Length: 184
DNA sequence: CTTACAAGAATAT
DNA sequence: ATATTCTTGTAAG
Image (cartoon, rainbow, N blue to C red):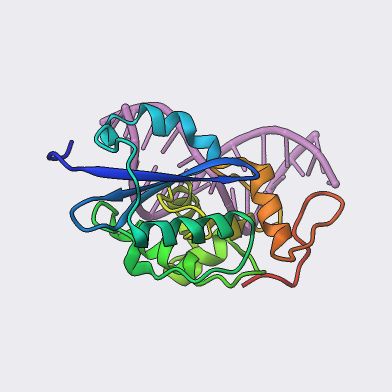
């Protein structure tokens, strides 16, 4: 589906399992982040067959270190310029960049994000865009929940989503819903 | 409070 | 062109 491209990947260990970060060699930007739950996808993605294991460069090591801290729910600044937006459609890009602005320790809802993007009726499309977020953790799509505060889905598994939010200080009621007041 | 469902935009096949 | 989706608001049980 694409011309010959070379990729590299590095991985870090987290409490959830191994997280893989894939770079494109020619611009050295991040193409994808695979959460532990997505391991099978990573292994079966012929798209990345060139990503034979390699020793990351110095900057790569730095990024891996940051991703590791993100997986522990800590506060980390990662510039969006490090990401490769080339293959991402405008709408999804819009949603992802908006999601990036959701502050640590707060959550938004698919509906609220939809309103900020334009129409209030695109909540489901927002969920769709976040579901295929190529940069989980870096783009904090775990900070998007349903309008009633329930968790919704997560590519890395709902338990991981909840854990990440707990690390950020989000509190839940007895029915696993984010308590009102922390919405962005 | 708990289903049930249409509406709805974007993307995957 | 059709199926699918990390939804939402409303309506009925």
